[in-house]
Each structure stands twice: as C-alpha cells, then as structure tokens.
Length: 259
Image 1 (tube, rainbow, N blue to C red):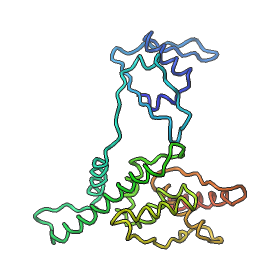
Image 2 (image 1 turned 180 degrees about the vertical axis):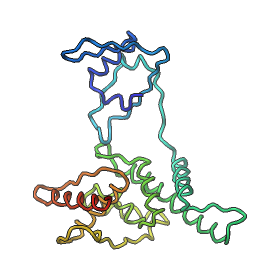
Image 3 (image 1 turned 45 degrees about the vertical axis):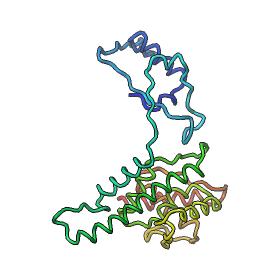
C-alpha cells in the first residue's frame, strides 16, 4: 500500500512505473552493486490519492495519464450528513455517553429522555461541523476539517469537558479574534448549541508560574487538549510575542504530566 501517492516526487513515480512494467524493482545505492528484486507472483498495489488542499496544499503531484494508466481509479465519496451523524452517535454509544436500554435498565423512561437530549446534541455538533466547514473553511487552511474533529469533540463530551470550550478549541484555535467570533455566533443556528455558555478556563495547576492573560490561558488549554488527543501543535504568533517561551512551558508541563 502506498498512502498519499501524489505526494511522491516525480522521480519516484517514474521508478514505480518502471517497476510495474518490468516486474523488477531496481535499487542503486552508491558504492554497492545494483540490487534487483523480482515482483512476487501475488503482488498487488493499492494506493491512495488526496486532493491538492489542506495541510499539503499545492504540494501534491499531478499524477498524469502515463502513471494513472497503470491503475484502476476508484472514487470514494465524502460521508453524507446522516452518515456522519450515525458515526457520531455510534461513538457516543461506544463510550456510554448514550446509554443502552434493555429490560433491566432502571428508570428506563428517564434514561430514554436523557438519550434523546444527548442525541440532539450529537446531531447538532455534526450539523455545526458541516455548516462551518462549508461556509468558513477554505482550501488554504493549514488543516482541513474532517471526521477527526467530530471524533475529538465526542471524546471530550464523553469525558465531561465543556462543549462550548471544546468546539472553540477544536474549530476556533487556529483563527484570529474576528473569525473566532463568527464561529461563536454560528452556535446560535443550532437549538442545543445556542444555550451553551463558556466554562471559565485557568492555567493547569502545575503550569509554570507566570503572568496570566486570556490569550495565554486559551492557548495553553488548546495545546493541552490537542496533545491529549495525540495531535501535534504549532503555536503561531508575531515575532517577539513570546511563543517560544510558551512552547517551552507547554512542553515542560505536558512532559511532567505524562511522567
């Protein structure tokens, strides 16, 4: 399997064509004899190709007819909104945010009503994701909005995190003040989200003692949330704004927390 094959340099694509046609992979290492590896009788190749947007915008290659003629191209469409909702509800059920009801469930009627409210919240989270992605994200964004964002929100909700703060972190941390405010205003379009209130954020207890302001607290919480969800981070700011020191403090705190 070759993932994101259209990120490969042209020379590598040419090597793949040659190997597929000759059924021999030739590797030339300076100072060593030419190594040739014959194709296994049962060899097959599956590759993936993403559009020229997102984190690798303008860096993906045009594979061209010569290369693509060696492959059967198969298109995999995006998830439909209802499919995304089914996935999100399934994640919530797997993590017992939405409770399973059977004949042994105590207060089954009460649990059922709670489930209905939680399902509404999950569906509104997905609708918000689709709405924001369609209206305000662009192909120039460093990071596109994908199903991973929905998964991260559901995981945070299951863990008891503030839905308001979570949405603001996952979808808004990359933006400056004006666009972040538009994101907050978008909450008003959804029944269960328009009633949300921000939960006061503070620096973690064991974070380095330093001057605190709203910007620092939001950035540190966003960094901590991202790292907890196994996502690397880049702190962006103007020169001499202190982001190097903030990055050091965040690294020290996260390392001490995981020791």
